[in-house]
Image (cartoon, rainbow, N blue to C red; front, side, top):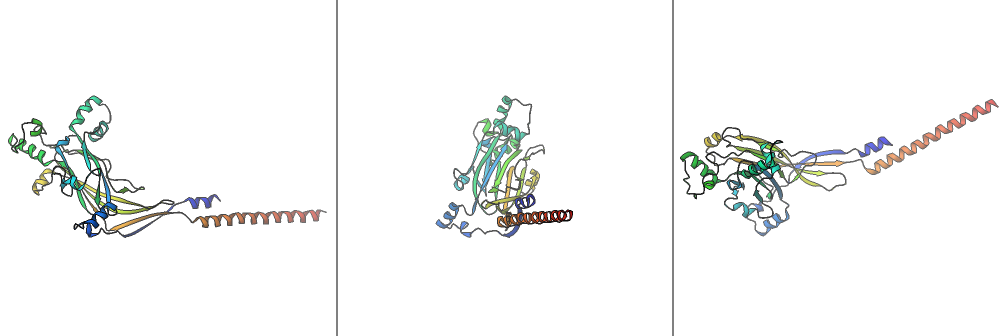
Length: 316
C-alpha cells in the first residue's frame, strides 16, 4: 500500500518542443483598430518589469528608453502611458546599501545624505513579443554638459548659470555603476531562477564610464502543474559584458554609458507538463493489492486450519 501510494504521489515531468506562435504583422504596419484590439487583449504583449539603482547618478542626469524612444524627448511616455511606465525616484536606504555593497557599519544619517546622489528606476511596461532594446543611461543633455566642462572647462551647450545643471558631475565623468535588482519578462518560470536578478555592474576602469551590455534570449515556456491551469512563462538565457569607452569611441557608437538590455524571442517554445499516475489506475492497483492480501490470508489460514485438523485426527 505504501509503495503504491508513493508511486502515485510521484510527479513525472514531460518536456516537449514546438514552434512558438508568431506575432501578426498587423502590429507593425499601423493596422488601426484591429491592431489596437490585439494590444488591448494582451495576447501578443507581455509585461516587462524593471528595477535598477544607480547610486552615483542623480535622477535629473538619468534617462531611459525602449526601442529608441527615450524619456527625455517624451517619446517613451507616448508609447508607454500610465500605469504601465517607468518612474525615477531617490533610492531607499536598503536599495542604496545594496547598490554600493554596504552590509553593516554605516549610520543611517550618513546614508540619508549619500542616497540623494543616486537614482532608482522602476516600473512595468507592456512590450510586444518581438526583439527589442531597453536602456537606462546618462541623459544626452547631462552627457554633453559633462564632456564640455571636462574638455573646455566651461559649458558650451548654452546651459543656465546654475552650477549643478552646468556641471552635474563636479568636473568628473559620470560613474554609471549600478545594481540590477530585478528584470523580469512576462511571468517567471517557477522551477527555474531568474538570471537577471541581483546583478552588480561595477565600472572599475578608473573613469566610471562604460556600458553594461546584457543580451537576453527568451524561450516561451508553457508550464502545467497537476490540478492547476496552464501558465505562459519565459525562461531567460543571459550573456553580459562591459563595453569600455575606448571601444565605444573606436566604433563611433552613439550609445551612452549605462545599462543596455537587448532581448529576443526564440522561434521554438518549450512545454513542461507535470503528470501523476491516473487515479483509476491507482485505485485498481489498490483494490488488487487488498484483494490479493485477503486471498493470501485466506489460503494461509485455510492451510493452517486444515493442517491443525489433520494433526488432531492423527493424535486421536
